[in-house]
Amino acid sequence: MAELNEKIQKIATELETLTVVEMAELAKYLEEKFGVTAMAAAAPAAAGAAAGPVEEKTSFTVVLTEAGANKLAVIKAVREVNPTLGLMDAKKAVETLPYELVKDAKKDVAEEAKKKVEAAGAKVEMK
Image 1 (cartoon, rainbow, N blue to C red):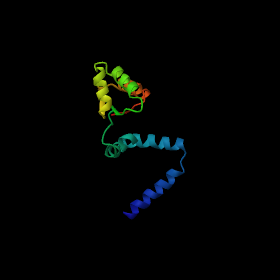
Image 2: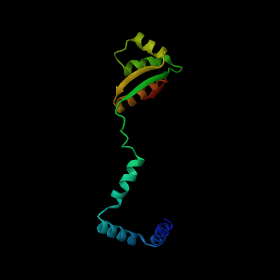
Image 3: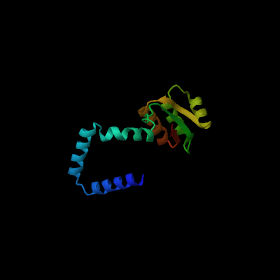
Image 4: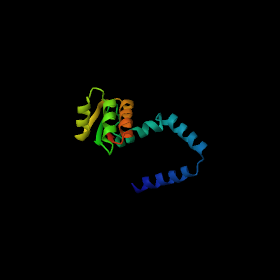
């Protein structure tokens, strides 16, 4: 095993002296000689490191966490975001926190709702 390690060390030392162009030529030669690309050889190692692609979140929920000092403006903003709520329902929503303003919405809709309610002085979370 020590002999193999010495061989690898000798090759590595030689590789360090190569220019970028020489390394590219060596890579091409090795691909042709052994029929394997560097990416194909690295793929099993990369597969172990990353379990899979991370999926981008497509639906968001906007939760009202704090009403802030100007409750009246927040109530108006809540009604603007969710027009199905009446005045009393919006008031109740602002007073009983946390409250889900928007559930399972697309990113742009959720961001718009968040922006409107935050402009009124409330604090919200986007999950």
